[in-house]
Length: 296
Image 1: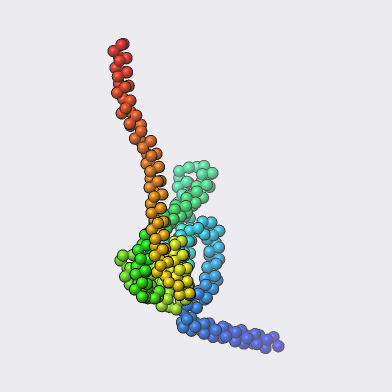
Image 2: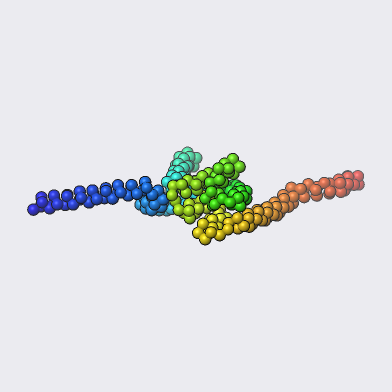
């Protein structure tokens, strides 16, 4: 009886495994036929299963990871695997620096408090330094993308006013913006590749906005999607959007000029004013000193 039950259970397990393998095979076939469904559904489920624990561990070790992750995405790191690899490299580098500081503390000092606290300070300082570098690179890339986006929108308007559809405009823009707009070129190639692979327009444009990593890209993606869904005319809105971008850049330049002026005032007070006062008062002090020497 027991042996028969074992055989029945074994046969049931074998049958379930065969059904699961068949379902996996059919899913794989569907994934090859419908790449958009592959990327959206199965990719998201796989990410949740394999990387959720790792993401939680990184957030526990490094609470700033939630802030650094969107910066890395705006730098063009779109893959979750690459995000996890970069975060792992940051933590590994910080641990290595902490271990080196521990060895140095053994040689330099005998204080147990310093030996205990130094690795933690080195670990935190390393992480903060890397975060600052990432933030600086992120701000620099966003500034370059904003600079290129104004010209890119003008080129978009030329194509649209020439009678091309939005899809044709994406492809034409991708063909001509390689050398002139290098930061937008790679992002535009990714957008065209997503469209060619069968990704829905709204999702492809959303990813395009994520890859740009600036707030203006979200507004542009809304304009593109509205034009695709409702058939609204896009060129006048893009012209107005381009004018707003130019106005924002002018306002930012004026604000930076005001900051530079205040900084220059502080520099003049600290360095130029003492020299000017010395130049103006030196003859009087010299005359007074000479008169005192004569009376003596």
